[in-house]
Image 1 (cartoon, rainbow, N blue to C red):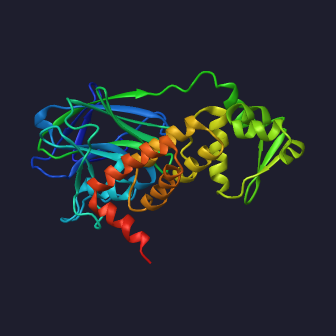
Image 2: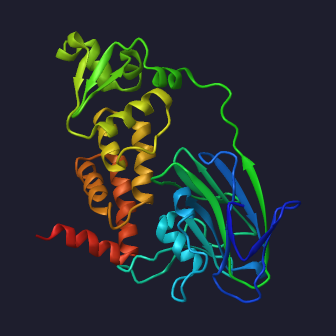
Image 3: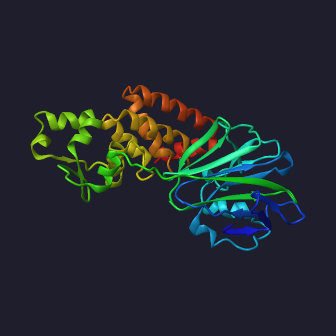
Length: 336
C-alpha cells in the first residue's frame, strides 16, 4: 500500500480489512501498482462488506490527504474532490452502483450508474491510455478520459471490521509496436506538413491519404496542397490536430485534445471511425463545464443531416432531460 487509513492488508491473499470498530467513511487505502500508466485491479466483496467505494486517484493528490478528516468531511469525499466523480464507483448495500457528486450546484450526491445497475460480487477498475473504465461481468462503465496520466487504485470501506479481497492484473506492454505507431513516434522521412496555429506538424502523406479521403483528394488532385505538400489547419488548436493525426497513424484515440473539437475535425476529414469513438465520449462524459460546447457540436452536425450525429444528439438530449440541473446550465448559457 502507498497509504492507508484504519485498514490492514494481508499480503498472502490480498485481503483488506477495516481495523476500526465503528461504521463510517474513515477507512481506506491507496494501492501500489507496477505501472501507474496501465493497470487493472479487481475487488471481490460480500454483501456484508457494503457499502464501499472503489476507483482511482491522481498520484499527486495522495500526499496532500489529511491523516484525519474533519467531522464534516469524510475520507472518500476528499479524494473525489481532488479528482473527478468518474474516477469512482459507490456500491450501495443492495449492490446498486452510483457515481459520487459533491458539486454544490447539483442536489444529488449519489447518481445511479444506469449501464451497471445492480452488480454481482466483483468490480474491476481499468486504467489505460489516459482513460478509466469500470467492469462487472459483461457490464462496462467507461472509458472516461481523465486529465492526469499518473494514477493509483484506491478503495474505501464503511462497515466496521469488514473485509474485501483484491487481485491485480499488471498489464503487459505490447511486445511489438505497429508500424504506424513507430512512424508516429519517430517522424522520420516525413514528406508533408500541417501548418497549425502555433507550429507545424510533420506527417507522411501516404499515411494521411490512406486514412482520410479528404487528404487523399488534396494530395492526388489539382489542389494547391498537392504541389506544396502543405495543408493549413488553423481553425482548431494544434493539440486537436495532433490527436487527429495520431489516430490516423495508430488507430487509437489519445486522451489529449478537446473531444468536441476532435469530433468536428473527424467529420471534416471524413474519419468515420474516429468520429464514432469520440462521439460516444461526447455523450458519456457531459458535465457543467463541457455541455455547451458538446451540445453545440452535435447539434451543428445533426441539423446538417448527419445520421450519426442525429443519434448522438438524441442520446445527449435524453441525458439532459434526466438531469435537470445540467439542462439548466445549458439553457442559461444560451441567454444573454
